[in-house]
Image 1 (cartoon, one colour):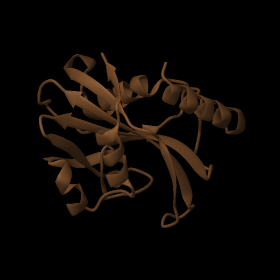
Image 2: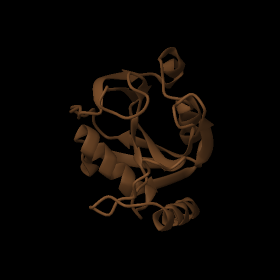
Image 3: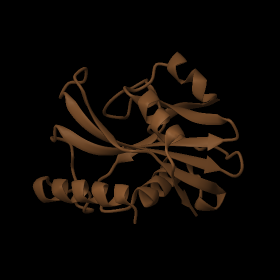
Length: 175
């Protein structure tokens, strides 16, 4: 386990001790003003995948994002990234070449109703083959784009910062 995983697991443990849990054991961040989240970019060749958020999600409806999810269980960032891309898109581990973990950061979004502070863990997952994308209820559309095109879209806050962190980062996890 790397230093980043150790730090994130400590943060998750702290929330787990303070917040309620869902029946399945996951931490319930619904009424918390702070939450750790995973932002997972998928890359195939020189393109990254953007996903348009549906009206069935709680925040940032209609904005472009990547695979994302709460860090609501004591799992490594690698494990959580694999779980989220399987759950949201149907992409299996055997199509993954490399996982690149960026340095996490905090930011407070004062534009949303509860002024939430996000502890964002950015991840880049490089794929061996172009996958068949299967959208779940969280997304309505997808688009493969060049990383330089990201800011041309109506994206969730700080998505460009997350991308910058994974493209610059040297923590690579081989499978």
